[in-house]
Amino acid sequence: MDEKDLAELIAKLKAAVVPIGEAPANVNATSALPDDLRESVAAANLKTIGEAAAYYTAMHMGNLTAHAKRVDTIAETAMARSIDLINNLGPAEARATSKVLTGNDSADQILQLITALQGALNAQGSTTKAA
Image (tube, rainbow, N blue to C red):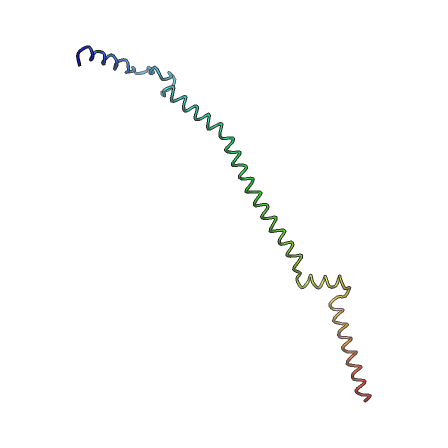
């Protein structure tokens, strides 16, 4: 390397060195970041902001779908329980249904059976005494 090459190298280094308080040529005077880096960050931020609406809309739709499934499950459970209550009568419901359909209460039916049995026993007793 001769003196001429060395002088050119020193000149290039001096041109590359930025004095304190001055901004390099590719850097905005109000920012410490190069312009191309700032532009790429701004583009990425704009993309993120633009996609946010779609992201939150999709998330909201997912929440609505999950809620609809829960409501359907609750409705199906309630319907199954109602059908079970209608189809499977307990003793109290069966007795009440019998009273409505026949017009006889269970106590009336038992009283009629007791009266019939007493009448049969009395009739049998009188035939035994007569013989």
